[in-house]
Length: 319
Length: 263
Image (tube, rainbow over the protein chains, first blue to last red):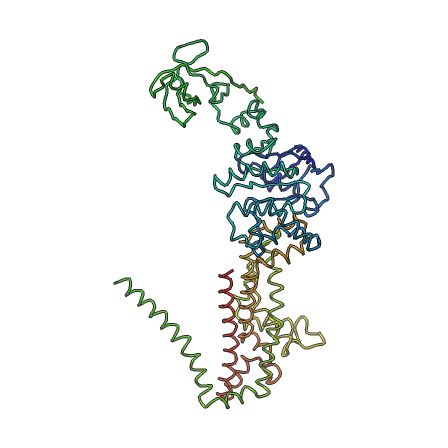
């Protein structure tokens, strides 16, 4: 079901967590809330879940206003960064919790739990306790628990934040496939732009309580609305008033139209990609991203003088 | 070599301290009780007064412990799960029974409930009777459950409770199915400490009891009564009964601790 957020604001004392945020999450989509820590993403998620009450504004799920609907009746599945596993219950009882609360008949609960455990690849571990699972397994259990009650929307709060890099990459891929299978409207919070780009169909960038931009990952990267978004979704250089991505910096050996002189500081070879750091005549540091072949052709060495020009740059009109 | 020596020294001091101040006196009480065999001891703990004192102590524990357990869990939830003003004051207030001398507690109860006190006009007698003694026992053993449960609540955080809520659980269901199981060891510890304190209370109960043998004497008061009547066997025997009750409480605490570590 679609989620609509209209003009939601929330303060904690003097701190403005959300400042007039409006956002539409289309039915069945996978949307990322991306932004730095403390920017308000988690607060927005908690407002949607009903765990936090907005000072003003409205949240609609499937067209229905959630203003008077308590958290337990919103039909949202919530997954926490630190799993929030019920430590005194087995994996089976954790996953079946919502169904038992709804007093579903026992055989139905058992069947549904088995089905979900298979979906999250935990079938053999039904009788274990959360303390006997790895972080990745606990998070998959938490996801199965949230899905068991067939939520109208699924909300994930930094779901992979507490896991190590390798498990995180695995789970991202897995979450995408799961979403294709289950197709429930999903919002997940992350501060990792790569994670957002890789998993989400739509990204909403949130900073200092404000929504900076919403769009497809490629839109955000290609046409960012402001310098903050440009800098947050990928590395960027600033030359005067224009902003240039490192892969849009062209390096030449001779002076041409529109070029500037620069000194090569460092050449870092990362396999196929080579990162070159340079200093312009006015002291501005610049980083460029080239392929190995390009660097070999230029025979780049630190200390060399080259001529640079951006083949694509963005100038933001002052807001 | 030196490390060994200092460890040995430390051990000697610690054990010596315990032996001198704890084991020797308690051991001596046991020795004196059974000095002349089982029969005299048995006879003196089965007198009507002794039996009455035993059951009165059990009644004190049976009322004070459940009352303070309910209050303690509720108050801990109030401190850790609500946004109310004046938490610091409430927090300090709970510790008052630790800070105030039991004798003062007894006197204060007389001021409120005694014949000339605030509620002196009531029909049934509170002071110099069981209700006053129960009140005194509740007062002195009040902080234990709060003090054991509140830190556990803080440590487990609100994630599990919020997860239960989003899964459709009502506040009541969340409490029974998620919060209570999570704090159960803290509650158990609090209950045991409350029981130990209620069993052993002397000062406050003594002030409000009137010390009528066979009527308002708990075991601790009975021990004093026998002692002052030069019935040393009676005093020692009753003391042994108290010590055994306390020992069983400590034993259950140790067993619980072991189970908690296994869990």
